[in-house]
Length: 288
Image (cartoon, rainbow, N blue to C red; front, side):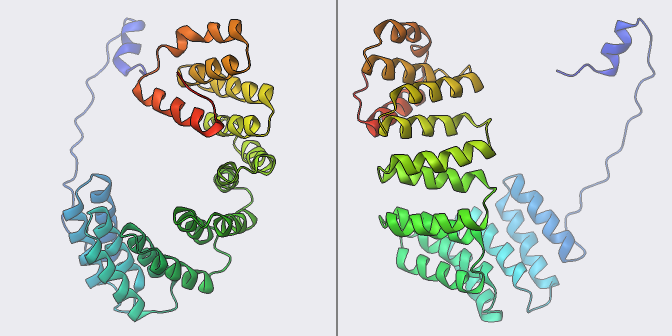
């Protein structure tokens, strides 16, 4: 905890004047214009008060130009947070009637359709958004997400690689491609993607975990162990990594090395054990 003024004064045996009370100005309950209403709506979303957020975003819609699409998109987003998908859908549809050339409502519609497992409609809306903004990496990624979810992994890979080409310095897109390639059992290519992700974000321990899976799949067991050790170095308190090390070294016949991880591995909680079970399943190893 950072020392207070009193702590410092006590250290030097001096007295300090009491700090003047600062009167906080009362929080506005209504925005005088669209910008203020949006600000209040965003604050309410942050606080988890979705009903109040919807109220502010509705007011912002009334305060904006009738042809302003952003207000409808903001209001629809608030409805989504409140788990009011039909209302969100209606706002996105109104926005599209106002301006068919804007991609944001199309993305919003796609996400609502996805929630209701209307995957064909979801893909169609995203494809329309991409027709308007073909170089939008985020839209390409959202398309890849849906395609992967419905089992069209090759098409998902194509869309995800497009996202990488459009945003080559974003480590998340490289990671996502690597993760999908592991799913496709294309381990060498997965390692290329994960290496790019790690070069952009070397302090992310989870990336080393995924890299370990790719190394193991590629038959490079020593490198898999090294990757987990690097992950553990970045987060020494994560007992899961010791459980994985014990698992891998046992599988490699390194019983003495595995035994050294046993005590730390025994401290795993239920969440860690489930993560270990999924990791073992992915690499084809039997977890105890």
